[in-house]
Image (cartoon, rainbow, N blue to C red; front, side):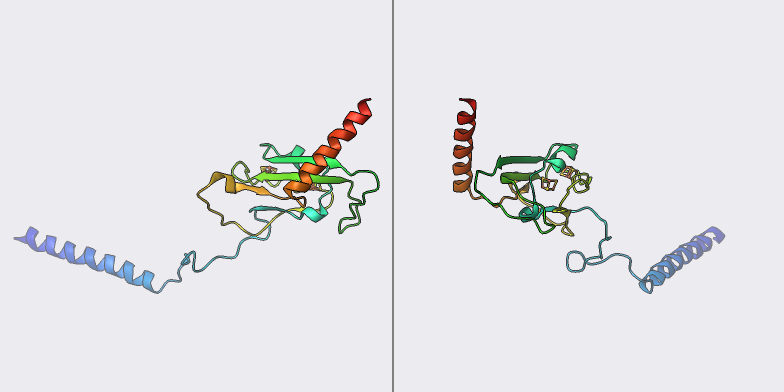
Length: 167
Ligand code: SF4
Ligand code: SF4
């Protein structure tokens, strides 16, 4: 009989302890947010999606060489005689066409090593971290200021130039 009442006492006590803990948390400030409706501020130096401000890129390949996983693919073509490709915003002279500047974000490990050697600071880590897609190809980011027709024309001219040089 004594055991019977002891079990009832223990049962009620544990329920009250549980309810007290629950009640206490109802008045504690939440540490989570209702993502994606609310977002936390991201740290200033966090590493997210890459962006190449291609108008400032001089095609030096330093970023591609620094990349440990080879996810930057580039193609450059030397400007032709009489062509002026202009200057970057820091005053560097642009001497190369850049028909291909691709970053495969599916391979990227977000190490940031490509951004440090960039002489014109055009390759940057943005504050964007959300990017989901059903197609893997969509994770290849293309940065070029030359359209496909112009790129084909440049390759053709470059090929002729090389042939003439070999003569
Ligand atoms: S962040 Fe790292 S892995 Fe990604 S492109 Fe730059 S160097 Fe390559
Ligand atoms: S290091 Fe900078 S300037 Fe050089 S190719 Fe890469 S993005 Fe362009």
